[in-house]
Image 1 (cartoon, rainbow, N blue to C red):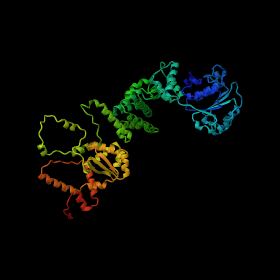
Image 2 (cartoon, helix red, strand yellow):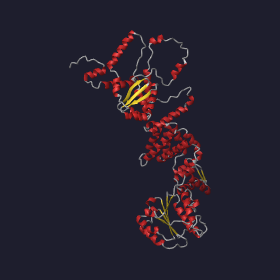
Image 3 (cartoon, rainbow, N blue to C red):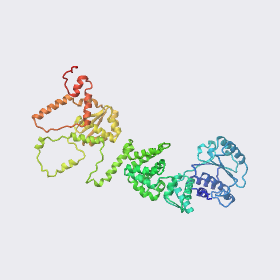
Image 4 (tube, one colour):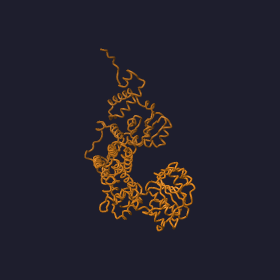
Length: 619
């Protein structure tokens, strides 16, 4: 019968212990200096070398050449404690999980005072020490505090906090750690070579991942793979199927589908993976690992030191992963990893994990459905990548990013507000040959992204665009938009290219300026109107000024009638002002605000510009 790999390859000296230099180094120095304590506490995760180091310490203490940090391996004590040896009567291992009661502690205390049979020290190795009861620890307390000269204690545990504090204070505590993936992978490669087994390079990262830093678990998994292999060869497909991991080609297909924004390809791959019997939780964990690898490669690149230890994939897959990482942005990779991580937590104990997996897949495809900031960052990143990818064709087909609603409405408002020359002006203008090309200045004007026909002047001129300006501010910084939407905030004046706004109180105005929101507001005005004004912010409510600045409907009607009569007598260019829906909404709001005190028939007459002709007689 074959002996398990973790037993055959158990270290016999401190030099053979891997990944625990912070423990073996001080122990070697203590042995060399002859300052060995009477009690030790070894703590750490399972399979990281606690009990093995305790055995090596007992062997070093009882070696005929010792105490020495390097046991000779030739004396009777070293041979008894070697791998496969019969053991020593003076080195007693106790499993506290089954011998942790007070009666067991009393029995140990009575036997401890007897001298060693054939060795220098009697060593008690108490494994799973956290399972000792409180009464058992209390029974050992005096013995651990003042033991005989020939007695040594080594407590090994995975939960040191459960060891009685009075016991911990009388020991030297050494905390073992999980072994680094790179160190563990090298160790597994040496074991496979010694066993004469050929293992694919992509298999060892899977074994290391399954072991999660435990040497014993890694050797057990490798032993299982070797036992079921054919022709002493372990392939990636065989290892993935046995360990239950998602096939690398399937992960590549899913990642490529997300990069292409193809929902059909994503759900086809999901259906194929789940129909093969793959656990949805395992699939999500494997996909999360892949996006993590892509994020590391996207940020660090191939030049990152110890990249093989950071990335779980095999080194021969790095080129393919770099190509996949280049198709994503950092914000998108980060969001995908966060969504998968949150979903993996939600899937614990879920009655329908497949449904949650499909919802997660849809969320990854639709960053616009994410109202958080990370969704907005992904959308901006995708637009930037589209612009950069189409940069080479900009001369023939300029790339125009999708306009959001505020900017689209602003463009409509600018088009509606542009005055058109009258027929009289057209007749008086000199005729030009249609075949002649337009002058350079006109061509530049036609291709400008945003242009104002006439300079903005007066509250009404800027008020027509104010809703679009505020919406444009909201798309950039919601905190600035919030201040512009407060009660009392609004336009005070627009004169000489200086826009004065009021924010209700001096404190709010000061905070608006200190945050740099005035520059942001100027950018929004320039985006919507094509004219960049100087922004002045004052701590004064704008409601009263706005009411005073806007004429009543009757005044506007009389002004319009006067203008019509003047136009009849004196020919002049005719301009048509078309008010957008948002501007009309603002006018209605202003109208209602100016007639708050009217009621009944007077309110209807003022609102509808109507005249009461009498009452309707009842039938």
